[in-house]
Each structure stands twice: as structure tokens, then as C-alpha cells.
Length: 130
Image (cartoon, rainbow, N blue to C red; front, side, top):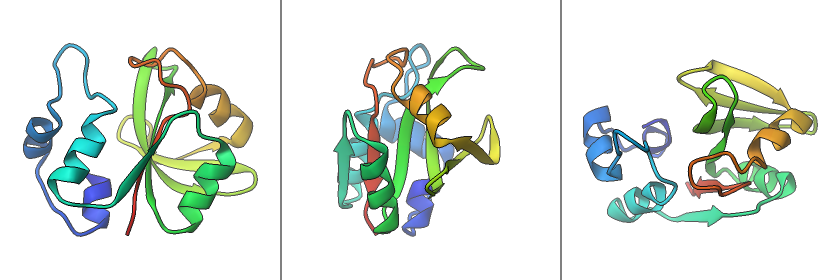
């Protein structure tokens, strides 16, 4: 919802669950993000095996980023909205972790590279262009 709201599209959680085809068993699939972007005719890109440099450049160009990473507290894959990328840290917004949760680049990279996500898709990112 946050990423869509950032580009002026307001939808309820219920509407997005339906559009993204969220499963009660497996949750949200990576492919749901492009599906919704296509539904709203938005420009986007998906990166698999991306680098932190690519993530930083995309953020600097003004893209709204969502990343899939291993969430150790829940023991599963998880999505978060990237708020900021610096030379030392990645700041994300995550409903479970709090508004601004900051990771060192090294720690974030370990979680982002993990193959323990549901789709086994390390270093996955979704960029919605403004």
C-alpha cells in the first residue's frame, strides 16, 4: 500500500489482497508486485540477483523500492519498502519491524542474499518509477 500511495494510488488492504492474490498459506508472491503495477499501468522493473549498488542507484533515481529478504524473527521471507540507502546503511519501512528500521549494509546483504525466502529468489527487488 505504501508504494502505491507514494505514487498517488490509494487502495484498501482488502483491495490489494485481492489484486495481489495473497494466499493464506504462502502469503504474497514476488510476481504479485508486477501484476499490480501492470493493473495500474505503472512503470516498474524487477531485479533478481541485484547488487547493493544497483539498489542504491535505483533509489537515487527516485524509484520506490520493495525488497524481499529473510526475516529472522519470523523465520521466513518478507517484503519491506526501502526508505533510504546510504554508503553505510539501508533504512526500510516494515509493519512488523516499525516505521524506520536500519540495517548496516553488511547485515542487510546477508538477509537479502538468503535463499530461505518462500520463492528462493535472493537479492530480489521491485522498483516502481515515479
